Structures are given as C-alpha cells and as structure tokens.
Length: 88
Image (cartoon, rainbow, N blue to C red; front, top):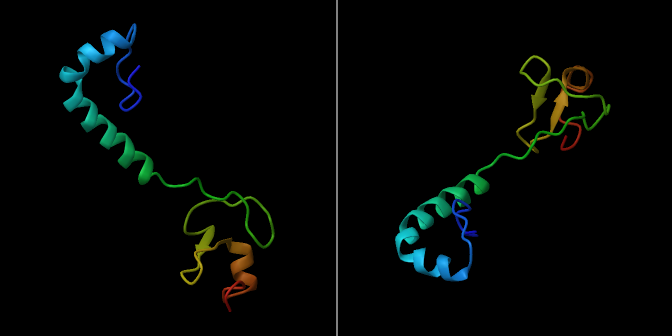
C-alpha cells in the first residue's frame, strides 16, 4: 500500500516501484490534502464546565467563551461570576 496517499494497494514491492512514475503526481496531491486536513482539524470540545464539572450544552445561550483565556463556562457559572474566574 502507498503510505503517503493511502489510495493504492500493491501486491509486492516490484509492482509498487513499476507503478510509481504513473502514481507520483496524484500521490503528492493527495498526501498534501491529507496533511492539510490533519493540520486544520479542530480538537473535540471539552465536555465539562471547568468550574462546576457539569456537562456543557453547546450554543450561545448555554455557554460563554472568555477571550482572555479561551475557557468555556456554562451559563450557570457565568451568571454567578461575571468576570473570568481564571484570569480576573
């Protein structure tokens, strides 16, 4: 199998080497796309509020992201502490 693009499988090394000139251009393009996809993939969101440890419900009415530290808090904790409790 081609380890760069993961699109083509080969029966042996000889077949892989003989097909390489035909495959090279498409392979580089696909490998670059895979690299960009992995580079810009967003990490999964945290699931619990860092203060009360209750599960977060995502949406502007349920959470608030503080720009000073990018912490996301639930609406209950935001109502109790209007300023960022991590940075103050």
